[in-house]
Length: 126
Image (tube, rainbow, N blue to C red; front, side, top):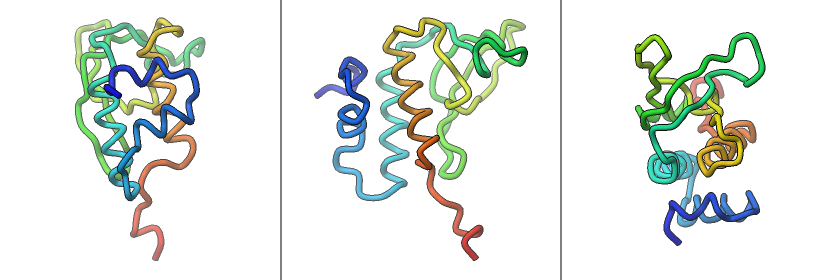
C-alpha cells in the first residue's frame, strides 16, 4: 500500500499496522511516523497551533517536516500569520479542515505520542 493511501483506511489500528510494518523497535516506529507525516500530509495547509478553541490557539500554515528528534518527536515547519517560520512539535498542530487526510495524519501522530510512543530517555531510567 502506498503511504499516501493510509489516511483513507477507516480504522486507526489498521493504519498503525500499515505505518509500522517492518518496525522492530521504538526508534524505527518513530522513523516510520516521520515518513508518514512527510509523505501523507498534503502541504501546505492551514492549521491551528495549540488546542483549537482555546485562547492560546494560533492559525498557521504547515509547510513541511522540519526535523525528528528521538525524545521530542517530529517537528513540522510552520509559517505564522506574521510571516515568521517555526519548527513546532507535530502533536501541537491540528488541521483546519477536520475531515481532511491531513487531520487524520495529525490525529494519528497525536494518538501515537499520547500512547507513550516516543522513545524513552535512558538517563531517566538511572
